[in-house]
Image 1 (cartoon, one colour):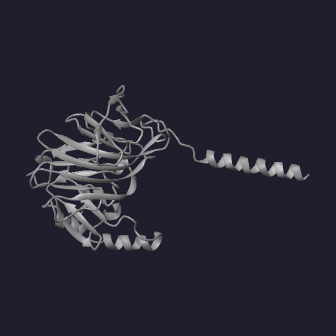
Image 2 (image 1 turned 90 degrees about the vertical axis):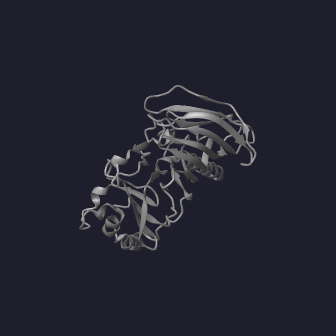
Length: 309
């Protein structure tokens, strides 16, 4: 009886252990070429330049990777119509050396896989690249006539559902969450904003998102933009001709934050700002961290549509 009881307990523990492992399996995202079950991207460091005349973003991204399996020789990323100029690897993020890469067959919906050769000690991967002027589906380039002020061009990104791969080579799956940081060079007089804590008073801002987010929530906007605070941790960004009206419309955002905190606990993102996009923005809004992208049609003059927040 004791032997039976001992055997039964062993079987029970083993069964529970197997069930626990199977309860959270690594699920293959059929909309991504990435191999995060083998090598997972945990951080991105972007250094980009926005070229309106060429409708192109060019620069570099340094990916911090976590080797989940030994002897894996390649990192596989998602891309869409990107020009890959060079790939490098490093054990420490300081000293890089060139490595080989290859691209697979292009799929109409998914883009093109990018396979980068890894060394046994690789912890960082640097990619020098540029976006396509016509096929970068996440990049929306507006002429000055498409803006409220009609003086300067405008750029914004819309990376949902799986379009981040058209302006950054990465593992473009909501199952892969990474922290990121960025510097963005823009033409004189134009301001870059991202889905992170922004810098109201400086043209050169080092953006930092210290909370892991999926790729579709990495966002960028560039234009003639001004800031108006609505509270100690909230405010409105918009074109100069719109910003005062927008700030009046959204003047209760700080109260909304306080009300939400009474229900759900402390707000975790540091700031909650709203970017009011130009009139040609075709969406209702996009819940980018720290900086919601919103349509100007919510500015009704009587706060009747601010429930969008």
